[in-house]
Length: 41
Image (cartoon, rainbow, N blue to C red; front, side):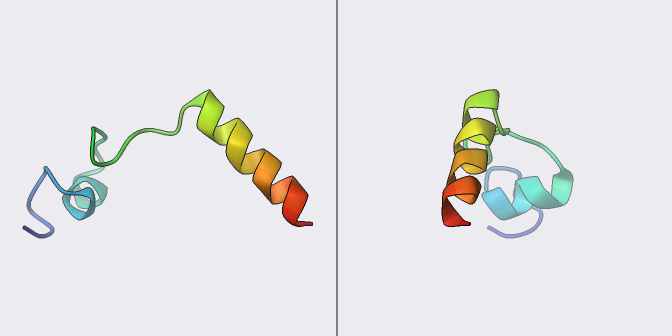
């Protein structure tokens, strides 16, 4: 399990794909991230 394994997060980052181990950022996640960044300031 390493860079060539498409089932792991690291492998998906290398391949540039998304799935269960590396989900795409949905609008809900983006909103949560933005809210957390705003609170931190």
